[in-house]
Length: 243
Image (cartoon, rainbow, N blue to C red; front, side, top):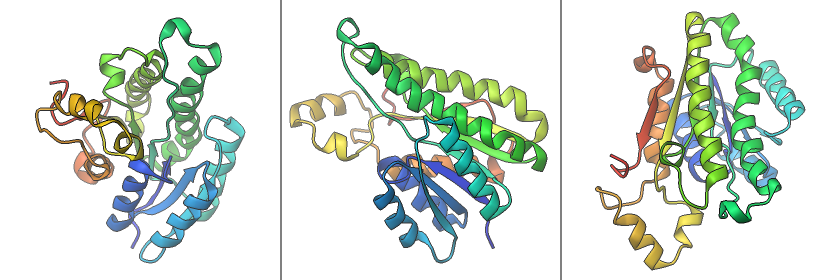
């Protein structure tokens, strides 16, 4: 029996894919969202079986696309129990050279996309008087980082949005929390020069990069009944990097 339907954005690779796999194994029905239709379809086919998995390609920075996706989820599953806002982009560069377009891109995808999906599922969760919203932010949203002013601003905004949603929807049984990963092994980190990787590792007390499953496990917990009294919080998953 399904534990309910969960939307996972940015599900075609990296942390999003790890979250999708973890939740499928836990028995949630899934609506997977990403721009990459081919990868998304392949993952949905793989995960279909014990659970129902729907691939819904789209642009999370487009309010119309988000409304369409949520309507399809509602039609398929009848309700939305969980939302995992994971999709994100970077446009790194020093502030003094950053174009307005590169400033705007992470805000459009990371912050606006999180708002759009949260806004779209809110009526469904309020009506059900139950729901779990989990937003993937970053330790950079807590500390800032040179060359990532745009990304840091978008991720800090997600933390503030998470807290505000927790206050607005808590009375209807809906929780809103964030997970802030540190350095997680992805396609991007694997390609970094060894010297850069060594420097990054030196900042981590556990002396290893995190893995997607480290983040996925925390997301699974926040979706569970055991986390029903936790809301408005940001759980840091960084191996002790920021203390």
